[in-house]
Image (cartoon, rainbow, N blue to C red; front, side):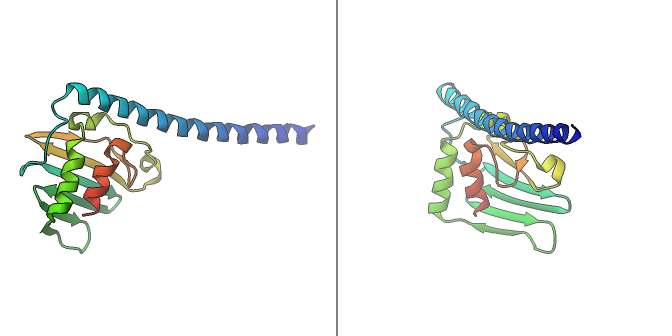
Length: 167
């Protein structure tokens, strides 16, 4: 009887884990769809959507973890990289092609919604993994994303983040 009870308990626990994982994936998909719908609505009503990168616009992707810090900043056409450790900060100008690519991505982004996009995952909270934040300063207003796992921003922000980090 004990063996039967243990077997039933083990099967129930395994089924529960599978359901939780499936629900988590569905929840992430639903959050992404909600963010996309919010962005579509904002595109119809917000003038902050159709903006080009100005010489004063600053876009920063900051990665951090315990004892680690790295930031890539685009201001105008100048990229500045800084990090913790022995690597000195560097600054350089990007090509017109790279700048235009990022400018076109930025043009399609609803920047006033950046703080409201949910992170697809936040395992950094309990496992000490690296986390990232996107910060945009445009026309004197700062827009900061919710913190997300490194390399896993909201789908609406992913293209911009990946292009900034790739500089």
